[in-house]
Image (tube, rainbow over all chains, first blue to last red):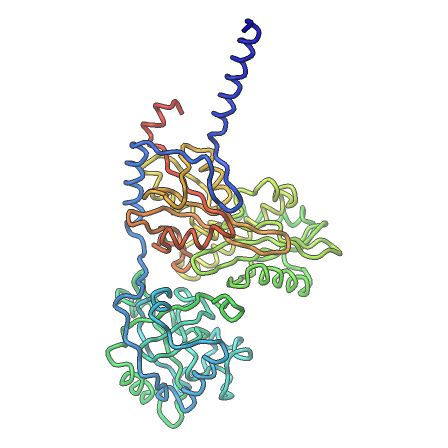
Length: 247
Length: 256
């Protein structure tokens, strides 16, 4: 082999080496499958271990599936004369069925305080954020502001407006279309479990009072919910997108 | 601070040769409909509008389950609206966005977002906050990795996070086998007429779960995916990537 050929071979080898070194910046296919991955050093993995440990410190851990509340008996008549019918219509309209364990495990579970409000409350009709929503909502009883059996009021800072929730204690799907005295709730409930990091706050369930007084409605609701007042809810879908196929 | 912003806003008004919110309602509706089609599952909030001599721009904030992001729609006269940018953060503006969105518009977008953040924060807590960011995914990763490694992303944009990890002191690993402590990222994908697939980034925890800023909890760091469910959610549409940071001592040894 001549000296020229040897020199050319050396040049070629060096060029290829530089090219291969340059390929250390990794590329991947559009499907996200990486090519050219390499092995981290032991010191990198040791550091990664510390990062992994720190990632969970003070992180929110949403509850899933375990310790779930027992579902109610599905009788929503306490919410008003048409509540059961409205709930069924709501389920049919949006394809909602009794939740399976798999679904419950998948949905986000939150601590919540279940309370009641009605059209006999002193501040009714309160000009809530829901008012402008009702024309397109699930109104079945002609009430322009709320629908017994499907409407709940929540703190929109914790559950976005329009979210779909499931309340096991009532076996009820509901639309978070209304909001209430969220500032007052937050103050009065501060430190309680429903206002901790995994708390949804109050879930105020709308009742059509009929011939009951406001106080009777609340009493009836408490009797129905019982010890589940400080209970659980599941957020099936955060925000209003579920009606357009986001669920 | 307020006076300075006011002066800047006046300057923008002059530069942009018009109003911040004087667009016809139909144009806003068309832009909103485009975004709604592009991410039908998202909760969409109007972020404001900006007019220039050449085009109108509409800003939309998107939220879907764990994810939060932002989309910018451009409406040129006589043309159909187009999505010109979408990500978990628009800052810093990417090269391709910079070429289609003038600098004064970029600054006006920042102002609009700052104004929104200030109003929102003031309403809920009575304190001022002018952070224009919608998502905190980079910020939450930085809170964990910076004190340990010294490395900092400094961005909440999935595109920027991916770029920084690719060019920074990292080792790329197979996302499916990402060891605990890996940073995982899936960049937002969008096209001018949709769809928008919001991206995501987080850290693989000791238990193999993903910890990341979560829109459902106001951007707080949350255990929100398993590695498997994260890959299933993002690989097909966005692509998934994982990186392990070099330890500082290792960095020194390599002369970085």
